[in-house]
Amino acid sequence: MAVITVMLDTNAYTAFKLGQAEALEIIQRAPVLTLSSIVIGELLAGFAMGSREAQNRAELQQFLASPRVSIRPIDDRTAQYYARIYRILT
Image (tube, rainbow, N blue to C red):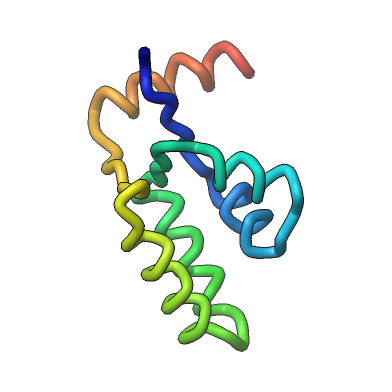
């Protein structure tokens, strides 16, 4: 049986932190969660612009410390997929 991996984008992580029911359910049930390094950058940039930067960073670090969560780097293969999807959507 395949393990389902859920890759979160910035909006999904934010929805989770805001307690939105659908995001909570998906994140709580997923056996494996990933975030891209781009998403981490977007979150950190948003934290820096807000008034709770230290608290948000600490909560993100706690989330990333879970054994179910990993960060996926963006590599050439990912860039190639992005280019194909972008071409299809435009």
